[in-house]
Each structure stands twice: as C-alpha cells, then as structure tokens.
Length: 200
Image (cartoon, rainbow, N blue to C red; front, side):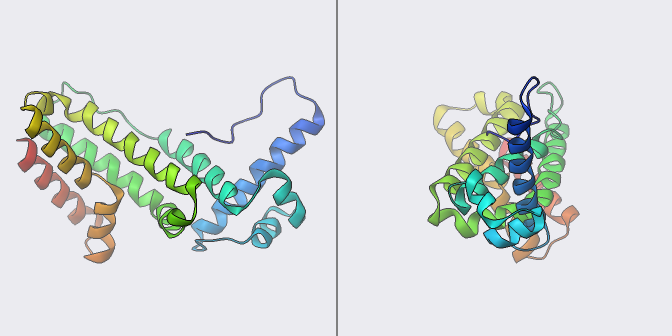
C-alpha cells in the first residue's frame, strides 16, 4: 500500500508546498470520515483543509483517487502499531495475541472500512485497496499459524486456512460487534474459541 509520506530532503519550496497541500487534503478527508461522514464532498474537504475547491482536483483526479490516497495513509499509520506474533509461542498464546491485535486494529479501522465498503463497487481504486487489505491479513494469519496449517493435509490446510482467514477478517468482527451487539471482549472470546477449535 502506498502512502503520503514525509517529504524527501533537498526539494525546492514549490514542491514542498505541493506535498504539504496534498497531505492536508488527505488529512482533511480522514478527519471528516472519522467524524462519521463516510463520503466527504470535495467542498467539505477543501473547507476543512482551508484551500480552494480547485486545489483538491489539482492534486487528485477525482474523489475516488482521494479516497484511495486517504486509505493508504490510514493503513500506513495503522500498520506502524502492529506487533508481530512470534511463531514459536504456544498456540493458545498466539491465538490470544493475534485476536487482541486484530480486534484493536479493526476497532480503529471501522469507520474507514464502512466508507470503503460503501464505495467499493463504484471504484476500482477502493476495491483494490480492500483486496490488498485481505491479502495482508491472510499473510499475517499464515505467519502466525503456519506451523499448525502446514502439518495438515493439503485439502485440510486449504479449508481450515480459509476458515481462519474468514474468522480473522474485519467482516466477521463487524458482524459480532455491530450485528450481534457484542462487546470487544465478547467478540474476542468468540474468535479465540473458534480459532482454537479449528487449529487445536
């Protein structure tokens, strides 16, 4: 996932202003999203960033491109807080750490995911971001539980691996938290028990 990063050294003032303006536009979109606006308009973004409306479209071709850039910025920030789960730990401890990490990330990302799923089928950029998200979580699951999965037959590994991926997805977390109104602790307990039953 790409991101709007800190500007490189040794660039001229005009380019630096452009980088800062682009970052301000992305941050404005993220602020509005975090406040509950799942589809901020260009004018709302411009007003929040304190720039002219035309400036938004000097940096982004359309709002989908801005949405994708905001997703990348958000994901980069979020991934900086991810703690790797060592593969040598006992299975129950790995499950507990993975579920704790995933629950914390999903809670932080709920508004962004809702905004993305609202727009996914209208935007190849947003669909691509969600595909990358799922691939990243699947890779993390394999790193955490590869010992157990690789000990299975090929067919079992495919089936159980996909079941673990489904359980540790944002969609499952949202189902537990929003549709079934479970607390964070209750949702985590459901996931821990389900994954332990699959892998244990």
